[in-house]
Length: 272
Image 1 (cartoon, rainbow, N blue to C red):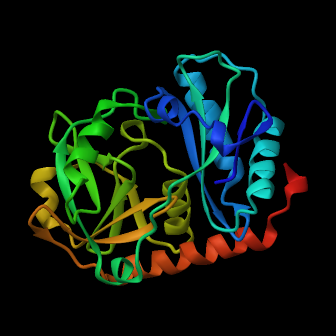
Image 2 (cartoon, one colour; image 1 turned 180 degrees about the vertical axis):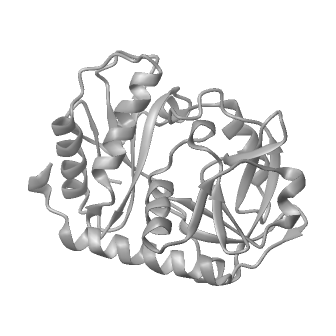
């Protein structure tokens, strides 16, 4: 990263307040950039402002400022592929909005082909529909992931139901039916929203249904979704094995890649 943006001003990365940012509480978004195009930009902006409303956070930021900062950051850094993080910290004045290129770790071809391993954690986020940083549950998940071969951590609420993952949404397939936790219990991920739309377009039997950890062994296949992850098949959660190459999962993966390609082909900055 050569430059970051704070309050519409392009600044050198030498002045980036890394120590403050790393521990900052606030609302944030992570937007994936592919071929210099910010993926699903409008949806990310909508969720950003929704998070601010849910946390009753006052600000004077609008869509135009948000969009112009994203474009300026991409242009200034000549960014082709990567992730942009947007943060509105809670401990500083509400108008202080940061945009920067954050570290990105994308899955490998083998991950998509063979599936990944997950572990479970008894935890939940206090206000799941708001995308907030600095939460204890994320720190606990990061401790589990550190130094392990695990890809993600599945969160189990106090009633024993699977809600979401620490950085992803999770979907299940049983008898060719696709389901995921009800939206009121999870962060409504942008990719999650697109997958639900894809399920409807493919004519799949889909529902928002809670699944307990005790019922997990009755599921045929599992996949997780996220901006960096896209659609990732799961090979195992704890010691329970699944079908990473389930035909329904493969069809959804293919449809999502097509959706991304169509979005890129139609994208125009002038629309924002």
